[in-house]
Length: 307
Image (cartoon, rainbow, N blue to C red; front, top):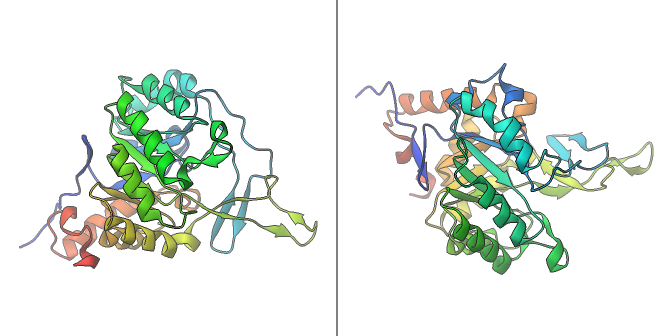
């Protein structure tokens, strides 16, 4: 039977996405930066830059350095703050008819809850992604993303505040990412997204100093894809909620690998800097693959590598 229009749609909690290709936070600005390249309405969802309660200036430069197969960044979560996001950035996204997921970050559980409360009921906000890789100042500098009980606690606290679909973005810099995923599922997450960047650094042999002003940064891009793929494969066995794969996805073939590993959706990050049309090309490639393989719906492919 010929299949010309396979069904790419899926659910993340109560949010229905037309296709599984999302943008990764921090790599797609607030959406408008890519309007010349991508029809934002065609993207599964736009995940905007991490948003905090108050504006953040970010780290001093240099903040980005290219590596052999990816990049290191230490942007420092520069953003306009939640009020300017709602008043200045979101109105534009509403005109594009795209689904918007707001990545939020805080230094305490209270800040995460305040952000979720502020976004409740705001027209055009379709979901929240918790970035739990930030230092928790009130807990003595321990990151939420590396402690199971704290990850469960912050997820449960935000869950009580909002009915919006809740995604928790996991750090790979842990011993057992499956346990972290299970903890946030128990906390009430509707989905997990993984992986965030790996910690790395670069040193200039000319200056004999670290290249990044922050000394260390987050490694992303094709270099981390095998690690990310392995973690998605492992996490998909540990949780019942959808898994969103992130990490070095540059082509539609990469995306298919993640879906076969158990990802219901994927986020494209560093590839946006190399090819600003990457999300469109990946979505089209997934469609063509399903047609070629005579697969009627993307759901049939999720986790097929495990069967």
